[in-house]
Image (cartoon, rainbow, N blue to C red; front, side, top):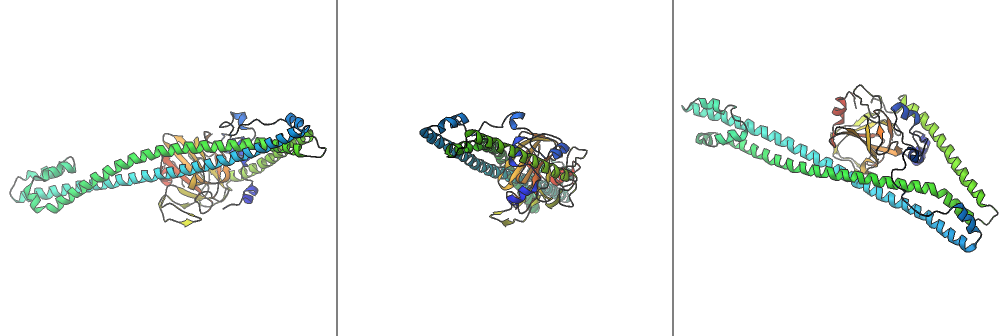
Length: 452
């Protein structure tokens, strides 16, 4: 897993503060050129996603100036500011804990839905197989019965009557059940048909129950997703509030506690200097991000054997990563390590291009989730319309470059590859959804002219 220092030195993506400042919906070329770096605040493009997480009456510098002149007032103001700073920190910690718990609940609900849908699919497939076996056995019994009656001197038209004339296994078995000679001499074939028919009905009934459970769990998962995104937005709003207030509060506190001749005006100047330093740091981060974006755009995203990540084909779809396929879709051997185990059924494909490599939107659509998601780690889901969606998991810390509700274009840089969640190394876990249920991305993308 990447260390924090390695991530800081990577220079391949915006800092957390920069991502909060701007979330542009641009083309892949534009997104790469900008590196998803901020040039304006959220307020400039429509305001924050949620109301400020912590509301309080903050002291002004005039309040500080007046308090300095009176010892009792100064002590009271110091206590107030300390409480405000602590309250901001507590609010961030509380909302982060709530967001993480909500994200874990979303992950569990999502996996339960996926598993229920998979079981319903398997049961229906087994029911269809048994129904076909029942029909084949019933037709066989009918042909044998016709042969028996013909050999016994009965009407040879029975052979035509029993050969394919019945509308279903039930229809044919009902006719056969009335024939004494069949019961005597063809009982085994008839019994096989009855067993298969009953098995098909039982499996079909189970599949129907499982589909109802699938639909219920899908609604639960969607509700958990909305709750998780809301909690994540509220945690981000709390952090934004803390970042916006902390420096000034700490400077005001220092001004009140300072026994030297320094003035409030000097502390105000210090706050302005700190803000200027942060602005220059953001510009430097933007420069590094643009350089990294250029590298990604030129195919240097890492990982051989996978093809160009972000390249849009004629169907309007794009490969989400330049990485090679390290794991396919379907049943797999369970692996355990670091306190967790992989699932026995893999609902996506893993594309490994290297830590920090670019992740691109597979198709145009609206981001309906961007944040932490339990075993997926940092995760993005895009709704492409018409019941079609895609998911992107194990994104590196600080590597989500889009927000929920944002429109993205096919091939747009949306994230960078990492090792978050239940992961055994840096890679992109890529899923494709039809009506919310994951389908094999290899086949899905191949039908759209893209190899994964």
